Length: 304
Image (cartoon, rainbow, N blue to C red; front, side, top):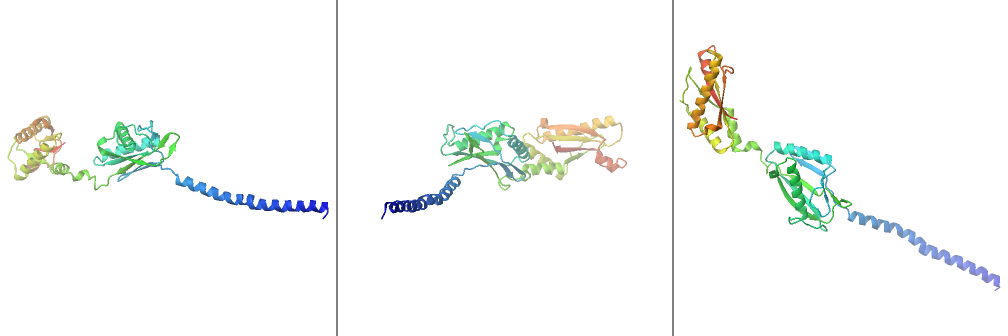
């Protein structure tokens, strides 16, 4: 074979070998690249962090904001100031809890397993929950309405060195927080004021002759006042319209004072009984009749 033929054969072999090597190695690299991208995506999903927004959701309150209270890494102190949306939520919670004094809320604080707990609490999550409670109390909320707990998790959403919202708020159900109206003493007060003790008087006179029903009302007053140490009784005297108004106001006051003395003898501290007189200004009967005038000559006794 001539020298020229060897030269051409060498070129052909080089082209064939180069094409084979390109297909075998470079094309395989191009095919494998998407598989590598898919694997990378799966890792991101596996490492997805946790974030809980500021949610107050109970019977009678429903407040949501995508912000929440924040903490620096390894710290149990609330980052101040809180955002405007969280501050609004706290004010809404304050109003709700004042109207529902039996309501209880559990604050759960979270911390990650790689954080250092420098607090006196058993874990950093519990320390954070207690600092949130402390902050709520500084804003006028009642500390007695909050319980706290802490949990440790592997990961939490952060922004640089700040954990975003590592806290949740769980409201007790109405079964575990009974309505105030079911309280025995609230019921008794409603009974006393709904059908109050009324002492009637003869013209210019007073009397301590009570019926059995009236004696029971006195017993209810004594029982209530003995249990509710801050309660105060109000005795308001009234008169008919016979005679001078100013004199009738004085007469109404004397009737109120007589009722106060009567209740004091039954064991109620006189300093816890206030008196007033409406004179002839609030009649419940017709002053044109003897029966109506008799009904107007009275003292009405209620719990303030």
